[in-house]
Length: 179
Image 1 (cartoon, rainbow, N blue to C red):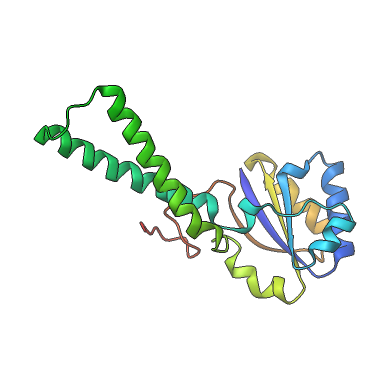
Image 2: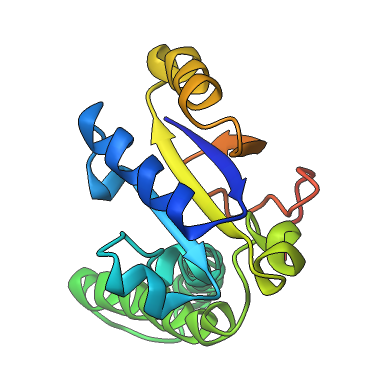
């Protein structure tokens, strides 16, 4: 799936876009609106971006789980090699899962306080009163959605398109970063 990012100046336009997307069969789960005016979104019953869309919680959690898993593998391999602990296989599996979960949990604290890497570039525009509309479309429907938005909503400016899936190793610049 692709995620299309549109900036819109007026809340009335955002409401019209929402209605048109619903008419096209796009559900609330496939488009999200990020705005400084959360009360306006609520009043107009528009689908506000979730915590997962606004923050880097999912990406940091994925990174933490990977780091916890790598640490667990290193620890368990060393413990098995040196035979420092005699534990049944089930205990080793439980320890591995615990360390993966602990890594994800601890990294989540960093992610919940960080702005989502995909929307960071729109921070100033949102703070200045613009609204970010994020639409998830199948690759086969991408061109049709762009045409629909251009015809019916020329005020909505396409800013970016990315995958709708998180990549724990990519920063805003599109280059891979490990940690």
